[in-house]
Image (cartoon, rainbow, N blue to C red; front, side, top):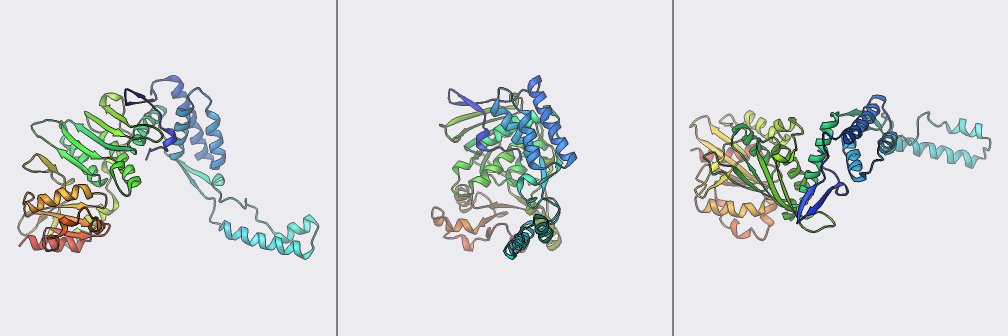
Amino acid sequence: MAVLSREFLNFRRVDGVAKFRFAAPDDPAQLAFAGALDAVASQAAGLGMSRGETDAMLAAAAGGNNAKFEAGMIALIGKRLDFVTPGDLDYPAMRAALFARSSAILKSGVTDPEDYRALAAPPECDIYGDLPDNERCTGYRRLAPAALLNLYNVSLVQTMLCFAEKITVKTATGNPAKLRNLFKHLKFCRLLAEIDDPGSGKPVTIAVSGPLAMFSENRKYALQLAAFFTEVLNQEKWSLTGLARPPAGSEVKISLSWKSGLLPVSRRYSSYIPEEFAMFVRLFREKSPGFAPVGEPPRPIRLKGGETLIPDFEFISTATGRRFAVELFHRHHAAALSGRLKQLADGELGNAYLIGIDRFLVKNNNLSPFFTDIPSSPLVFFFSGFPGVDRVAKRLAALDK
């Protein structure tokens, strides 16, 4: 992921709005600098250079009049390089044995350097080969200079989103497949969101809580929000507005759209399915032939009040053909859970909508009033981390009678 550290944030405030200092993909000087970094990274991977050597050569490529941009680009290139400790040697054990032998030799009274070295028998390799600066470069995920500059621009936005309180994404509905993919990744990233899909070809609005609105796990949530932004870029026409509190600064507004010049950075993420989701579906197909997971992503469910729900999973009964939706509420979904439980109690969700709740949320004092009648509800189950197949299958079977 292209998220950078906070010190690389590069923007200015204009009337309370963040104006990102984006790189210009057609600027000759910036293209040349990106090309120089690309050449160093390619050489490092090709020759198996050490991290220390690679960092020194990347730093030597800088020297223009835009230090923050250059530092951010160097950090970005570093994220695309792979380093490993040379060999399979247990360096700490080797050093401990060498130091123990050396100490014993010195205590024995040996003074001749040649005799000392022969008795100590140091290895031919660098005894500090496992230190970070001595790790060897084994690969580089290469991008063309213009693509590197675009990735830098995207990374600036992703880094700012890590300090967001809330964002609102609007996207046209011209391409239903792309919109479904956006919904899919909204769920895969486990973001807390409210979706308004008015239909009739009108734009879909997704209001997403930012990491600063979370009471726990806000760093993980921040990275998930940043990952979600890459899918927003794949939409044909989109806009993003929000509010952020970057470090060492006052509150700032975010306002971007497809007109900002940001391009999609990868199509690989569009087909990404988190391992826990893929494993759950795979095991469900193996263990529960009575219900088949369908839809990818599941169909949106529109309520009478205009709210649109995107369940995590959808199943169809092989016996009756009935469809069932399953929505999971993880530990950072406390705010949304209270509203969903009220909808459940009021009968708005019907009898084919299962709600899974992380047990961590049961300890939330603000939610305790909602759990009074939950244990007896056939539409609610609890899990820790991620639900088990058997638990969900049993609930589905009970509802399918």
